[in-house]
Amino acid sequence: MNAQSNHPSNDTTDPQFLGPEAGQQAGGGQARELGDMRTILQAALTQPGVMNQAYRAFHNYSIGNQMLAALQLLGKGLPLAPIASFNAWREKGRFVKKGEKALSLFMPISVKRRADKDAPADSAEAGEGGTFSLFMLRPNWFSLNQTEGDEFTAESVTPAWDAVTAMAALDIVEEPFRQLLGNRLGYASARTIGISPLNPLKHKTRFHEMAHVVLGHTAIADMQDDETLTRQIEEAEAEGVAYLLCALLDLPGQAESRFYIQGWLHGCSLPEKSAKRIFGAADRIMKAGQPAQH
Image (cartoon, rainbow, N blue to C red; front, side, top):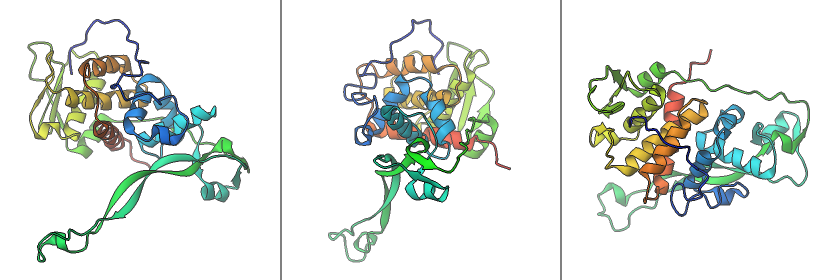
Protein backbone atom coordinates (compact mmCIF):
# COMPACT_ATOMS: atom_id res chain seq x y z
CA MET A 1 0.00 0.00 0.00
CA ASN A 2 1.28 3.41 -0.84
CA ALA A 3 2.31 5.92 1.75
CA GLN A 4 -0.40 8.29 2.84
CA SER A 5 -0.53 11.40 0.67
CA ASN A 6 -1.78 14.84 1.58
CA HIS A 7 -4.45 15.51 -0.99
CA PRO A 8 -7.69 17.44 -1.29
CA SER A 9 -11.05 15.74 -1.15
CA ASN A 10 -11.80 14.25 -4.57
CA ASP A 11 -15.05 14.41 -6.46
CA THR A 12 -15.76 10.71 -6.95
CA THR A 13 -19.21 11.29 -8.42
CA ASP A 14 -17.57 11.70 -11.83
CA PRO A 15 -19.46 9.25 -14.09
CA GLN A 16 -16.17 8.28 -15.72
CA PHE A 17 -14.56 7.27 -12.43
CA LEU A 18 -13.77 3.76 -13.70
CA GLY A 19 -13.47 4.68 -17.35
CA PRO A 20 -15.61 6.20 -20.09
CA GLU A 21 -18.24 3.46 -20.19
CA ALA A 22 -18.77 2.94 -16.46
CA GLY A 23 -21.30 4.72 -14.34
CA GLN A 24 -23.55 5.99 -17.09
CA GLN A 25 -26.44 4.05 -15.59
CA ALA A 26 -25.20 3.83 -12.01
CA GLY A 27 -28.14 5.74 -10.58
CA GLY A 28 -30.28 2.61 -10.32
CA GLY A 29 -33.53 1.79 -12.12
CA GLN A 30 -33.89 -1.26 -14.32
CA ALA A 31 -31.76 -4.26 -13.36
CA ARG A 32 -30.73 -4.77 -16.97
CA GLU A 33 -29.05 -1.35 -16.80
CA LEU A 34 -27.01 -2.61 -13.84
CA GLY A 35 -26.15 -5.95 -15.40
CA ASP A 36 -22.40 -5.41 -15.56
CA MET A 37 -20.21 -5.40 -12.48
CA ARG A 38 -18.35 -2.26 -13.51
CA THR A 39 -21.56 -0.26 -13.18
CA ILE A 40 -22.31 -1.81 -9.78
CA LEU A 41 -18.76 -1.07 -8.61
CA GLN A 42 -19.06 2.49 -9.92
CA ALA A 43 -22.18 2.94 -7.80
CA ALA A 44 -20.44 1.50 -4.72
CA LEU A 45 -17.57 3.97 -5.17
CA THR A 46 -19.81 6.99 -5.62
CA GLN A 47 -22.58 6.34 -3.07
CA PRO A 48 -20.89 6.24 0.37
CA GLY A 49 -22.80 4.38 3.05
CA VAL A 50 -24.86 2.16 0.76
CA MET A 51 -22.50 -0.82 1.10
CA ASN A 52 -22.88 -0.98 4.89
CA GLN A 53 -26.65 -0.53 4.73
CA ALA A 54 -26.95 -3.19 2.04
CA TYR A 55 -25.00 -5.73 4.09
CA ARG A 56 -27.25 -5.18 7.09
CA ALA A 57 -30.35 -5.81 4.97
CA PHE A 58 -29.07 -8.53 2.62
CA HIS A 59 -26.25 -10.28 4.53
CA ASN A 60 -27.17 -13.73 3.17
CA TYR A 61 -26.35 -12.64 -0.39
CA SER A 62 -23.05 -12.01 -2.17
CA ILE A 63 -21.61 -8.50 -1.93
CA GLY A 64 -22.37 -7.87 -5.60
CA ASN A 65 -26.00 -8.92 -5.16
CA GLN A 66 -26.27 -6.86 -1.98
CA MET A 67 -25.28 -3.75 -3.91
CA LEU A 68 -27.47 -4.67 -6.88
CA ALA A 69 -30.54 -5.12 -4.66
CA ALA A 70 -29.83 -1.83 -2.89
CA LEU A 71 -29.56 0.11 -6.16
CA GLN A 72 -32.85 -1.28 -7.45
CA LEU A 73 -34.70 -0.48 -4.23
CA LEU A 74 -33.25 3.03 -4.10
CA GLY A 75 -34.28 3.46 -7.74
CA LYS A 76 -37.83 2.52 -6.75
CA GLY A 77 -37.78 4.95 -3.83
CA LEU A 78 -38.01 2.07 -1.33
CA PRO A 79 -35.98 1.61 1.86
CA LEU A 80 -33.40 -1.17 2.11
CA ALA A 81 -35.34 -4.03 3.65
CA PRO A 82 -35.17 -7.84 3.53
CA ILE A 83 -35.83 -9.53 0.19
CA ALA A 84 -37.13 -12.99 -0.66
CA SER A 85 -38.72 -14.88 -3.53
CA PHE A 86 -42.48 -14.90 -4.15
CA ASN A 87 -42.85 -18.37 -2.60
CA ALA A 88 -40.56 -17.58 0.35
CA TRP A 89 -42.71 -14.57 1.29
CA ARG A 90 -45.83 -16.71 0.98
CA GLU A 91 -44.34 -19.21 3.43
CA LYS A 92 -43.86 -16.31 5.86
CA GLY A 93 -47.54 -15.37 5.54
CA ARG A 94 -46.89 -12.37 3.29
CA PHE A 95 -47.96 -11.83 -0.31
CA VAL A 96 -46.59 -9.66 -3.09
CA LYS A 97 -48.75 -6.61 -3.74
CA LYS A 98 -50.49 -6.42 -7.09
CA GLY A 99 -48.45 -4.65 -9.74
CA GLU A 100 -45.09 -4.94 -7.96
CA LYS A 101 -42.13 -5.78 -10.20
CA ALA A 102 -39.49 -8.23 -9.03
CA LEU A 103 -35.88 -7.35 -8.28
CA SER A 104 -33.24 -9.07 -10.38
CA LEU A 105 -30.13 -10.63 -8.87
CA PHE A 106 -27.33 -12.75 -10.25
CA MET A 107 -27.83 -16.48 -9.79
CA PRO A 108 -25.93 -19.50 -11.13
CA ILE A 109 -27.41 -21.20 -14.17
CA SER A 110 -26.14 -24.62 -15.27
CA VAL A 111 -25.26 -24.70 -18.96
CA LYS A 112 -24.36 -27.82 -20.90
CA ARG A 113 -20.98 -27.59 -22.58
CA ARG A 114 -20.90 -28.77 -26.16
CA ALA A 115 -18.55 -31.60 -27.03
CA ASP A 116 -15.74 -30.72 -29.41
CA LYS A 117 -16.66 -32.43 -32.68
CA ASP A 118 -13.23 -31.74 -34.15
CA ALA A 119 -11.31 -33.40 -31.31
CA PRO A 120 -9.69 -36.84 -31.81
CA ALA A 121 -12.08 -39.68 -31.03
CA ASP A 122 -10.00 -40.90 -28.08
CA SER A 123 -9.66 -37.47 -26.41
CA ALA A 124 -11.71 -36.22 -23.47
CA GLU A 125 -12.99 -33.27 -25.53
CA ALA A 126 -14.68 -35.66 -27.95
CA GLY A 127 -16.99 -37.03 -25.30
CA GLU A 128 -19.83 -35.40 -23.43
CA GLY A 129 -19.36 -31.69 -22.95
CA GLY A 130 -20.48 -31.71 -19.31
CA THR A 131 -21.95 -28.65 -17.59
CA PHE A 132 -20.69 -25.36 -16.20
CA SER A 133 -22.27 -22.46 -14.33
CA LEU A 134 -22.99 -18.98 -15.63
CA PHE A 135 -24.20 -16.15 -13.41
CA MET A 136 -27.23 -14.49 -14.98
CA LEU A 137 -29.78 -11.91 -13.85
CA ARG A 138 -33.10 -13.41 -12.82
CA PRO A 139 -36.16 -11.42 -11.59
CA ASN A 140 -37.13 -13.58 -8.61
CA TRP A 141 -37.01 -11.35 -5.53
CA PHE A 142 -39.29 -8.87 -3.78
CA SER A 143 -38.65 -6.50 -0.90
CA LEU A 144 -40.58 -6.59 2.38
CA ASN A 145 -42.14 -3.27 1.38
CA GLN A 146 -43.48 -4.84 -1.82
CA THR A 147 -45.49 -7.33 0.25
CA GLU A 148 -48.36 -7.31 2.72
CA GLY A 149 -49.72 -9.79 5.24
CA ASP A 150 -48.53 -11.17 8.57
CA GLU A 151 -46.25 -9.12 10.79
CA PHE A 152 -42.60 -9.61 9.90
CA THR A 153 -39.64 -8.55 12.04
CA ALA A 154 -36.63 -7.75 9.92
CA GLU A 155 -33.29 -9.11 11.12
CA SER A 156 -30.49 -6.57 10.82
CA VAL A 157 -26.98 -8.03 11.07
CA THR A 158 -24.03 -5.82 11.93
CA PRO A 159 -21.03 -6.76 9.77
CA ALA A 160 -18.21 -8.39 11.72
CA TRP A 161 -14.76 -9.49 10.55
CA ASP A 162 -11.64 -10.87 12.23
CA ALA A 163 -8.24 -10.67 10.53
CA VAL A 164 -6.71 -13.70 12.28
CA THR A 165 -9.69 -15.91 11.41
CA ALA A 166 -9.67 -14.74 7.79
CA MET A 167 -5.95 -15.23 7.22
CA ALA A 168 -6.04 -18.71 8.73
CA ALA A 169 -8.96 -19.69 6.50
CA LEU A 170 -7.23 -18.26 3.41
CA ASP A 171 -3.78 -19.66 4.28
CA ILE A 172 -2.22 -16.19 4.46
CA VAL A 173 0.51 -15.35 6.98
CA GLU A 174 1.22 -11.85 8.28
CA GLU A 175 4.91 -11.50 9.13
CA PRO A 176 6.73 -8.69 10.97
CA PHE A 177 7.32 -5.84 8.54
CA ARG A 178 10.82 -6.13 7.08
CA GLN A 179 11.06 -3.10 4.78
CA LEU A 180 11.34 -0.10 7.06
CA LEU A 181 13.28 2.01 4.57
CA GLY A 182 11.36 4.21 2.15
CA ASN A 183 7.64 4.92 2.24
CA ARG A 184 6.24 1.42 1.77
CA LEU A 185 3.37 0.69 4.10
CA GLY A 186 2.67 -2.89 3.01
CA TYR A 187 3.71 -5.74 0.76
CA ALA A 188 2.60 -9.19 -0.34
CA SER A 189 4.84 -12.08 -1.35
CA ALA A 190 3.53 -15.54 -2.21
CA ARG A 191 1.04 -16.14 0.66
CA THR A 192 2.74 -13.77 3.10
CA ILE A 193 1.91 -10.14 3.79
CA GLY A 194 3.60 -7.44 5.85
CA ILE A 195 2.10 -4.23 7.27
CA SER A 196 4.26 -1.32 8.40
CA PRO A 197 3.90 -0.36 12.09
CA LEU A 198 3.89 3.25 10.87
CA ASN A 199 0.82 2.68 8.71
CA PRO A 200 -2.08 4.94 9.81
CA LEU A 201 -4.65 2.68 8.09
CA LYS A 202 -3.39 -0.82 8.82
CA HIS A 203 -6.76 -2.46 8.24
CA LYS A 204 -7.07 -0.99 4.74
CA THR A 205 -3.56 -2.04 3.79
CA ARG A 206 -4.20 -5.53 5.18
CA PHE A 207 -7.29 -5.83 2.96
CA HIS A 208 -5.24 -4.60 -0.02
CA GLU A 209 -2.36 -7.04 0.50
CA MET A 210 -4.70 -9.97 1.24
CA ALA A 211 -6.50 -9.12 -2.00
CA HIS A 212 -3.23 -9.38 -3.93
CA VAL A 213 -2.88 -12.95 -2.63
CA VAL A 214 -6.52 -13.96 -3.15
CA LEU A 215 -6.55 -12.47 -6.65
CA GLY A 216 -3.48 -14.50 -7.58
CA HIS A 217 -1.21 -11.52 -8.20
CA THR A 218 1.55 -12.90 -5.98
CA ALA A 219 1.56 -16.20 -7.82
CA ILE A 220 3.21 -14.30 -10.66
CA ALA A 221 5.48 -11.88 -8.82
CA ASP A 222 5.94 -10.30 -5.42
CA MET A 223 3.93 -7.12 -4.98
CA GLN A 224 6.03 -4.16 -3.84
CA ASP A 225 3.70 -1.22 -3.30
CA ASP A 226 5.67 1.99 -3.65
CA GLU A 227 5.34 5.36 -5.33
CA THR A 228 5.75 4.00 -8.85
CA LEU A 229 3.00 1.57 -9.86
CA THR A 230 3.61 -0.33 -13.06
CA ARG A 231 0.71 -2.76 -12.62
CA GLN A 232 -2.24 -0.40 -12.77
CA ILE A 233 -4.99 -2.98 -13.09
CA GLU A 234 -3.61 -5.27 -10.37
CA GLU A 235 -3.29 -2.35 -7.98
CA ALA A 236 -6.75 -1.06 -8.84
CA GLU A 237 -8.18 -4.54 -8.25
CA ALA A 238 -6.53 -4.87 -4.84
CA GLU A 239 -7.54 -1.38 -3.77
CA GLY A 240 -11.06 -1.96 -5.08
CA VAL A 241 -11.32 -4.94 -2.71
CA ALA A 242 -9.94 -2.81 0.14
CA TYR A 243 -12.53 -0.11 -0.58
CA LEU A 244 -15.46 -2.54 -0.65
CA LEU A 245 -14.45 -4.10 2.66
CA CYS A 246 -13.82 -0.75 4.34
CA ALA A 247 -17.20 0.49 3.10
CA LEU A 248 -19.01 -2.69 4.09
CA LEU A 249 -17.50 -2.65 7.61
CA ASP A 250 -17.88 1.16 7.87
CA LEU A 251 -14.15 1.64 8.52
CA PRO A 252 -12.00 4.69 7.80
CA GLY A 253 -9.93 4.79 4.63
CA GLN A 254 -12.71 4.86 2.04
CA ALA A 255 -11.80 8.33 0.73
CA GLU A 256 -8.15 7.29 0.47
CA SER A 257 -9.12 4.16 -1.45
CA ARG A 258 -11.19 6.12 -3.95
CA PHE A 259 -8.31 8.57 -4.40
CA TYR A 260 -5.79 5.82 -5.14
CA ILE A 261 -8.13 3.90 -7.47
CA GLN A 262 -8.74 7.08 -9.40
CA GLY A 263 -5.00 7.71 -9.61
CA TRP A 264 -4.10 4.16 -10.66
CA LEU A 265 -6.74 4.11 -13.39
CA HIS A 266 -5.82 7.51 -14.80
CA GLY A 267 -6.09 7.09 -18.55
CA CYS A 268 -7.05 3.41 -18.19
CA SER A 269 -10.50 1.79 -18.05
CA LEU A 270 -11.16 -1.03 -15.61
CA PRO A 271 -12.09 -4.22 -17.51
CA GLU A 272 -15.40 -5.88 -16.69
CA LYS A 273 -13.59 -9.05 -15.66
CA SER A 274 -11.60 -7.03 -13.10
CA ALA A 275 -14.81 -5.69 -11.55
CA LYS A 276 -16.05 -9.28 -11.23
CA ARG A 277 -12.74 -10.32 -9.65
CA ILE A 278 -12.94 -7.44 -7.17
CA PHE A 279 -16.38 -8.47 -5.93
CA GLY A 280 -15.38 -12.14 -5.85
CA ALA A 281 -12.24 -11.50 -3.81
CA ALA A 282 -14.08 -9.18 -1.42
CA ASP A 283 -16.67 -11.93 -0.87
CA ARG A 284 -13.99 -14.52 -0.12
CA ILE A 285 -12.11 -12.31 2.32
CA MET A 286 -15.28 -11.16 4.08
CA LYS A 287 -16.69 -14.67 4.48
CA ALA A 288 -13.33 -16.05 5.64
CA GLY A 289 -13.18 -13.55 8.50
CA GLN A 290 -16.70 -13.84 9.82
CA PRO A 291 -17.04 -15.28 13.34
CA ALA A 292 -18.40 -18.82 13.65
CA GLN A 293 -22.12 -19.06 14.25
CA HIS A 294 -23.09 -20.75 17.51
